[in-house]
Picture (cartoon, rainbow, N blue to C red):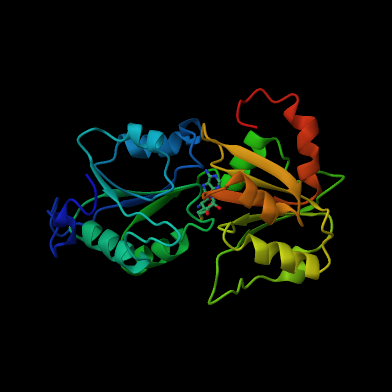
Length: 271
Ligand code: SAH
């Protein structure tokens, strides 16, 4: 069942399960795509679900754990194409829970890593709706393991930073470039593909050498995973040349150069 196909979900009063008793919400991180990366708690929540609201980045195979007769609502969210604005998703969750329906809110990766789970949890708490949070493997961890890039390493990176590369306003990425350009650090940038030229330029302008190892990991942990490695300076051109498309992560730092040693021994077909 898709959100758009079933207008019932837009109406003011969704079917009440137990009038007066609010439903329970379980915020679940689905991991980066490979269903084997779901936690046992996530699988349990999905198996028991009667209603699931899921995002664009939830791997299709993850949904196999949802009972066939449960209701599935796609609430989407792709960079430029929001199926439902965030406020409407929150509003829908609150209305469904208030009407007595328990639901699973399923998100790609981890709910609290660029997943807007914080906003949803705050809204639920404010509305007095009980909820649980099930952590998921964030895509940066998936990429590290499935592409053979250790995110930290005693000799190369003692700090790990997750940042978002999404645009704020016209042509602006509001990041602390000086902090990101520090040495002995790994930077993983989410949602940064379209702003990659700005990211590459700014990090170099703030002192990170153009030849710093860097990689793009597309569709990590999924059968279509591609990992393209090169240098910070050359990454925008590599992205273009290889036609890298979202979802993709940018990994910057000397740990990327370790991939060539690790990939040799890595059994996974993804590297
Ligand atoms: N909560 C998610 C992140 C959501 S933001 C998590 O913890 O992973 C969306 C961004 O996550 C995408 O633009 C991309 O940068 C990254 N991403 C999510 N899944 C991915 C995947 N399978 N492969 C590569 N990048 C992914």
